[in-house]
Image (cartoon, rainbow, N blue to C red; front, side):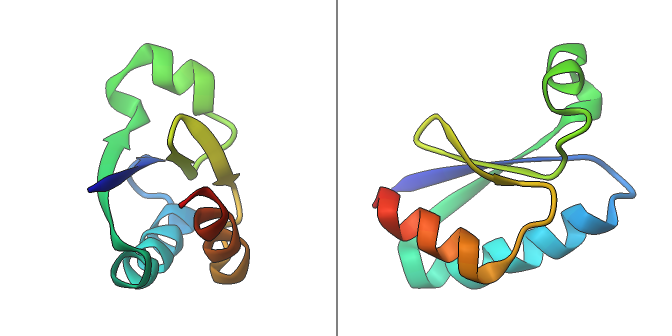
Length: 80
């Protein structure tokens, strides 16, 4: 199964909204979600600290920051 990596952190309102969007698309497109809390890794915090939330698919960032259903759906469909 295809896997989406979702970079997030606790107490992040944008992350909560993005997770809901990902869950809506999960059944439609068919992928698993691997959630990574960037606060657990200095490397991830340095890499994604100002971009959170970040959605990565097949090694490529498909959307970050303000995640919206339409854009994310379009980009994930293009990659599948």
